[in-house]
Image 1 (cartoon, helix red, strand yellow):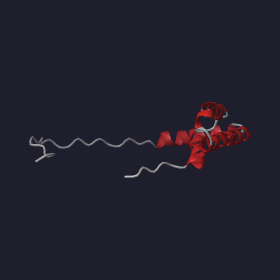
Image 2 (tube, helix red, strand yellow):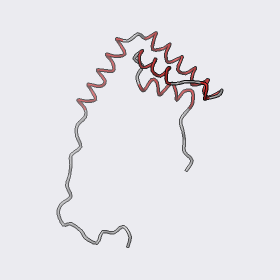
Image 3 (cartoon, one colour):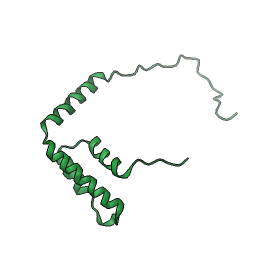
Image 4 (cartoon, helix red, strand yellow):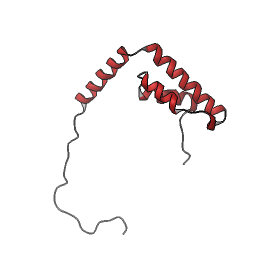
Length: 100
């Protein structure tokens, strides 16, 4: 039969405990809160709006004429998070749903 191992080990299966990432998570949440409180909110909003407009232009027009990377770099320099940048694209382009 395919998929059945003829040779079986009689030793107990090794149990590896899952690591506790709660301290890492708390540190990341604290770091993100500090970032959001210390950055220029107006610059973040302006850069995300520019990014969305460029994404709309790309979706509606000739994609070869729109350069997204400079807008992404400007958003990162304004301290936009990866989640905020991704959400901006999601709002304009939507999410891909592969057909099965």
